[in-house]
Image (tube, rainbow, N blue to C red; front, side, top):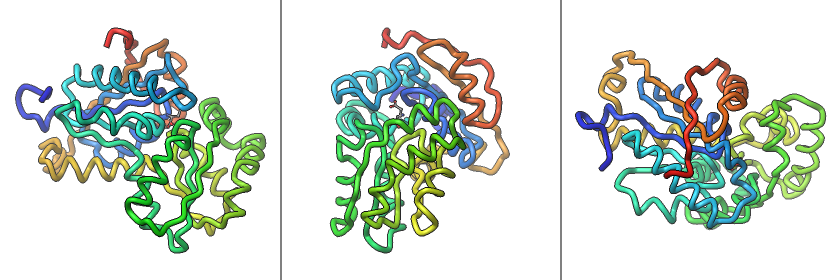
Length: 280
Ligand code: DGL
């Protein structure tokens, strides 16, 4: 395994996404696992993944993983729903380290939450077209009814910081009208960017519908897996108050990433490094 030379538990966790959206997952990781070092890669030069084919997303995913392996990570989180939905299951067997995507944690949380057995899933075209959430939910509970809907316009709105604008509310309302009609009680936010629009989506759906944030759920699964495999950083698992180092890499100019990331994380991040992902 490609890990740190000394104690493998001291190696960083790798997180990747098509761009900045995965920071909604990383943010939950930082909260839940503050003592862990994290290497984040955002493939901003090839964002968005959500409208691309399975073949292209799979080849991008392999390159993203190859980049993180170079940083000797101990565990990988595929924060991108589109890559998790169409590529991760095909590629994970080729690597000798544990990886988690965002689909299964989100699906499990939704099944645990629903009481009516009617779950909605929203995501990019790639995620919804793959049917990955519906399949995973049905593997867990075949009796649940799943209603899936692609909401591609919500990604650029979140990316541009249109968080509390009337235009975003109108578009969300238009998309989600059908979810009202089918009377779901649980809605999976199946895209990295949607947690940013949680307030608008919650408002549109009303208080009878529980929103599932896959990012939060994925961070919980990462904590479980690292604990079970004995890979939690020793200083952090001992409650030693360690503060992890966070490194950020992107495949195109860092400035745009930096300004959007500041909004996503609520803090300024320094030292974002640009890498040529085509070489991986
Ligand atoms: N990260 C993607 C996802 O969660 C959204 C942005 C994109 O399409 O690349 O599906």
